[in-house]
Amino acid sequence: MDKAQILKEKLYDLGASIVGFADVGQLVHEKYSSLPYAVSIAVRLSDCIIDEIDTKPTYTYFHHYRTVNTLIDQITLRAGLIIQQWGYRYIAVPASQTVNDTGETYAGIFPHKTAAVAARLGWIGKSGLLITYDYGPRVRLGTVLTDMPLPVSKPEIKDGCKNCNVCKIACPAMAITGNEWDVTKGREHIFDAHACSQYMKKNFQHIGRGVVCGICVKVCPKGNKRRV
Image (cartoon, rainbow, N blue to C red):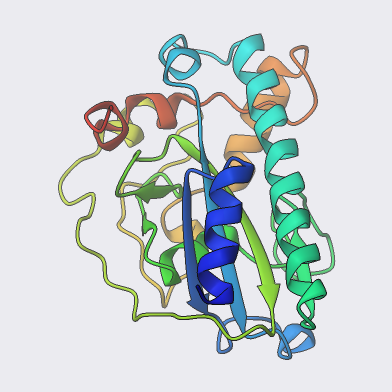
């Protein structure tokens, strides 16, 4: 068994629900150009907790969201340690972190969704969320950047949001434009991250810092119909 397959099986053992590999050499910031490959993982969220969401965030979802982020950070760290043990370099991108010196607000050092699309885990929906082929948007994402050569394939979007606007209609912050994702345009073309953040801060900060409502996750038909 080759190292890539060993790594993938280890990630599943650690709790990842989906694992993929991608070539992101043309997508990373120049400071990370020596790490042209990405390990992309998704951890499935609890359908029971998501289904409890109605018109506002719940305390249970807030805790679940943060706990899954912690799990993802543990998984990607462990993946990185394995990669390093094999003689390669890595950076485990934090599951949820805003970095203020990237030139873009509400952004991290590298977008998890970019790695996930390149790894063929799904597509970016009108909500700005990754819509996975297996679980819709009911996941959280993690990424490891590395110089370990990995087996990759060309991204291919097999599905899409098409004429669906359920998330746009349901969004209480009116942050979703209803446009489809376009690689040549910025995030604001489909999603107003500032409007979402300010709405949450104004109305639900009592639940906890960084609270997210999860309504767009809950209503997406791709997540509702792909149950097992």
